[in-house]
Length: 151
Length: 169
Image (cartoon, rainbow over all chains, first blue to last red; front, top):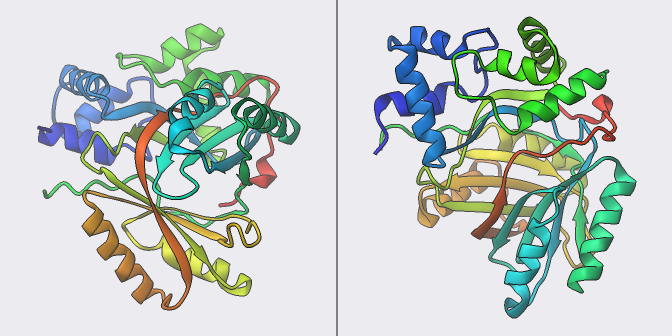
């Protein structure tokens, strides 16, 4: 179960985590708890895999060249093809989805040429064609992930 | 533009800030920078929009948001920007992107993401979205996620080419 402190840490610091020498103490002061309690609570959230990290979300395509890629893989091949795709350091998200296109991943290359060469390599090694879906526009302004704390 | 030091800094913080009293000092020590220099550079990258947000990145699945739907829509090209902005306003929508159609194989040009606690709730939210945005009659598909094979921050290498102008607010 999440404590009220865990919920506040999860909800209130997705966009503006303090950029000061002592961010955890600043948070502690804002929430009226001790710095040690804040550090311990973040440790728990990290150990229980409730947070991926505290860090930056980089604007899409601000650095390098990224794309969403979809593949339609047979059920028999999905496990090893997914493992192959995840093994590339350029891939940061990789999901199975309920669709004829059942494998969806996001990758980032140094530039378009590098991106295309990684995709060509994945196609050659998996034997499946990749559908390349680069972002054309990002309409999302409301940042972070809003948790419903009332249930 | 960002310089080589900004680049090293982004690479260093991408794996996550240490959970310790002076986390920026720990990053600074790795890069032979001062703590204040690390903070100032991160503030600047954020102010310039290269860092879209700076903070806790949650794992929604672990937090009980197990129903994750990517919804793909075929929207007339002259309405996609307007509808994309309208859809983004809804509190339960987590991402909204325009992507290129792939002919008849995949005729969709607008993508949005809804993370919910159950499939039923996500489908109710999708129905509400269609109604409030006037989307009745459009062609769409709802793709719920099944297995997550990998989720982590992107790795940026030194050779990456910064392209600030390509970022869409």
